[in-house]
Amino acid sequence: MAKVIGLVNLHANVDYKGLTERRPAASVSFLGRYGIIDFALSNFSNSGIDSVGVLIKEKPRSLFKHMGLGNSWNFNSKSGGISLLYNEKYANNPHYNHDINNMIENKYFFNKTKADYVVIAPAHIITTLNYSEVVEAHEKSGSKITMVYKNIDDADKSFIGEKYVSVKNNKIIEVVVNKGNRKKRCMSLSTYVINLDYLMKLMKKSSSVSAFFDLSDILGYLCDEADIAAYEYRGYATCLNSLEAYYKHSLEFLDIEIFSTVFKSNWPIYTNTKDTPPSKYKANAKVKKGFVANGAIVDGHVENSIIGRDVVIGTGAVVKNSILLSGSVVGPGAVLENVILDKDSKVEVSKSLTGTSIEPLYVKEGDVV
Image 1 (tube, rainbow, N blue to C red):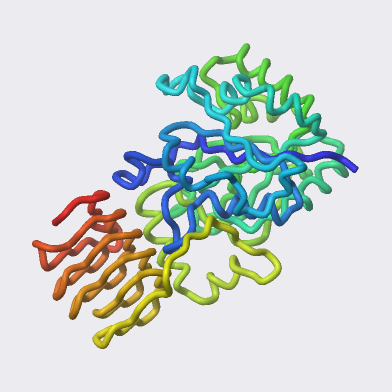
Image 2: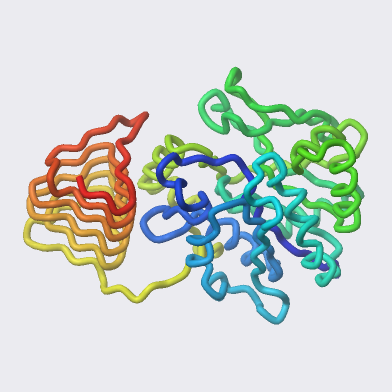
C-alpha cells in the first residue's frame, strides 16, 4: 500500500485587509468557531492521511495558538501527526518566501516520511475533497503529477486571481490566471498529488528556471511537457481569497442547502475545542437565521449574522448581515449592518455602523468605537 503525506500550503496571496494584518488567513475565524485551515486539515484526516505538514508563509503566532499540539484533527500521531514548516531564512523576503523554498528549507520532513506520494492543498479554497480518491486516480493515470480542477460558471465573480486550466484528453495543457473575463472556467483548486521523488526533482528544476518561481509557476511552465493528469472534482468548492469573498461566502453558509453540502455526518469538520458555557439568550433576544457560538450572550436582535464565541450583544441592539468575531461587544441600542467586528472590539460610542454587502465595514481587533 502506497504511503501518502499531506501538505497544507499557506503560501497563497490571500489578503483580508485588517483581518490578516497580524494573522494568516488560515487562522482567521470562520462561522464563529472554526479556523479556515480546519477544512483542509479535516479533509486530510477524513482521507486517512495522518502525516501532514503545514507550509507557513508569514505571521505564524495565531496559527501556532490555533494548532496547539495538533490533537484536535484526529490524526494518528504514531503515523506522523502535524508538522509546522516555517521558512525563517526567507520569511522577510517576499520574492523568495514561496512554497518551493519552504519545501527546500524543510526537506527533512520529506526525507523522514519516506512517502510515495504528496498531496498538496491550500487552506483558502474550501472543499470536502476526498484526497484518497485523487491518489487512487493518480496511481491509475501513471502520471507523476495530478492536478485537481472544478468546472464553474461564475468565474467572472469568484476565483479571481486564481489559476484556471485547459484540459485535453484528461491532461492539463495550460495554466492561466483567471482575470474574471469569462463565466465558465476549469478552475485549478491548487490541489495536487505528486510522486515524492518527482517533487524533489521539481524543486531543483524550479530553482534553476527562476528563483522566484513557486509551485504553481513551475507547473504552468512545464505543463506542456510534464504529463500532468487532470482530476475533476464535482463537489462543493469556494475560494476565500479576499475580504469581500470571505464575507460573502461566510454568510452563504447560513443557507441550509450550502451548509448541508459541507457539514455531513460522514465527513466531520474538526477544530480545537474550548471550554466555554452554552450561548445565553436573555429576555430581549431574537435570532433569525444566524450562527451563535458557545459563550455568546444575546439580548438584542440578530439576523443573517455569525456570532463568535463569548460575544456580547447588549439590550436592544440590532445586528444584521454581520460577522462578529470572538470576544467582541455590541453595546445596548447599537445598530450594525454589513459589519465585521474583529476579536475583542467594542461598539460603545458609535450607535450606528453600516457597511455595504460589497464592502463590509471592518472594525480592528481590540478597537473601541
